Image (cartoon, rainbow, N blue to C red; front, side, top):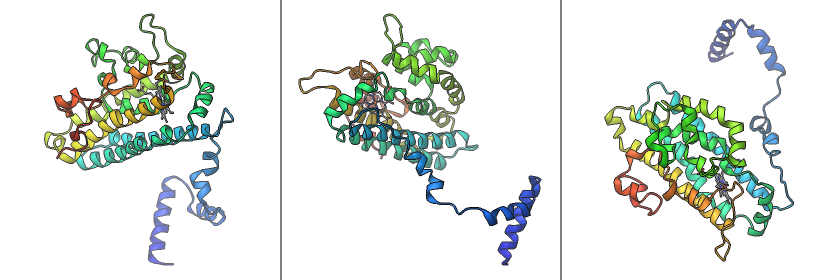
Length: 317
Ligand code: HEM
């Protein structure tokens, strides 16, 4: 036995003693354990059995699987955001490295959106979409959690109500005025559509808890709490701006164009979305103006948000 093996055995003994466990029993267990395989570790059987079509149209599979890929990437993004939130002493290196990981995932989501736009036959989509009503990607809980964890609530409040809401507003009240309520609420009667009420029934209490947790731990608040020289670090600033731009303009525009391909006919007739929103107005960043880090943009950049693709959006020199 090498000295390294003896050291390892001593370390293992110390570990199991601490847990009140017998090292020899665990070593015996190792003698009989099965070798690990790729399929057990990655859980390929479970993963590849999650795709169930509701229709006979082959392209519905593209639609289902691409949404599942999105949800996996959303999970990877939330994983990184959580690491930023949990980090004890946050420095610009750790912060920007994690932000660039997140941005790479969102870059991937934005550039791959053509899988939706170009990757399905229009006729098939127009038929299988009827079996989805009233469901919509709008009901992706992880997408909403990414928003709550990225910025302060005020930046997610519908612009029409921002003057009435501040940090002392109860979370329940703020929730009712989030920008996305507009997609599912009749503003004259206040009545909620099935899209919205089903979504809230499933996730509202979880969202309120999550909003509370990230009230002081969201990316924007954490960034603002850093010392001035760290905040002005070019690398970190670029990472912050890149993230905001990728999520709130690039991805949103890719999504909007895909919706346009399927929901606007060659004669210009606009179809109703499965979720039932006034989607052309609701989804466009020039109307929605969702901006995670508003102070990091110049007046000009804010003025042209979602209208012109300014070169400065890409990188500060
Ligand atoms: C052909 C593909 C797609 C079309 C036509 C489409 C269409 C739409 C429409 C019209 C809305 C507005 C709400 C409604 O009334 O339904 C919406 C919202 C949404 N969709 Fe999609 N979508 C597509 C693919 C995707 C994919 C792949 C995802 C990824 C998970 C996604 C995520 C979302 C999200 C998060 C919202 C809410 C956005 C917001 O509140 O600003 N969509 N979609």
